[in-house]
Image (tube, one colour):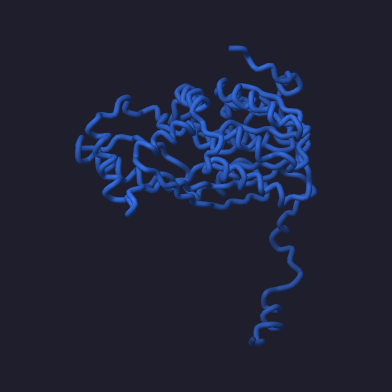
Length: 334
């Protein structure tokens, strides 16, 4: 298997990396290891061979994320796309945002190769595309080097989500845009319930089988903590129906979204797995026999600070008091 021969990123790979070493010590998050990043890389290697290009969930999330470029008047000549739904983002980004140079990065070599092989079908869109293998937790990108950073369904697997977002901000030029989509805490709530009941029944306790995910209320704080200005957060929930719990698990494998917790149980007992499937179907199955799975997606937007951006006036700078406004309009009725 040959390594991808993408354009060398010499200007991006020299000094001033946006890695943790260059983040202000006051902003760094804890180094607690929640996820096994090496295992996640292997899972994404496997997903590169299982992935379905017509996955309606992945394609819908990618389209909805890139749609946000339509709401912005400015263009983004250079963009960095981080690991997650790389191929879906590449297809969706055609003709949008004024992108001229695109860097596609993933921790999985097989995923990068998949995207590179698919590039031949997109050769007519005149976007100069480069490929690299890298980790979102240690961005090998020069500071202030890109106009746009996109991450679609990848950042929720980082051990240090605030740190990864800080690095993304550092990679942006002033007035650069950060777009991200992550799975939220309500994702796979049906499977969580079924797993908990089955484990309590079969093993007398609960073992972590599904990763912890950010809550909607945390998203705005994450953007602010990472130093982004004009933060925006919105949420969508998608419900996908499957013929069985096994089909759901196969879909998660094809997306690279299976369990990668450091403290995971290495092997799932057969009777516990069967009990989980039985509980799932008994509690949530529809009349036609299909079972639902909820995917909550949190969309986040933020900008790197620039003097041209709107800023709140300093406290006490108002020239009209609320009392005067009340006197003027308070007595009026509709």
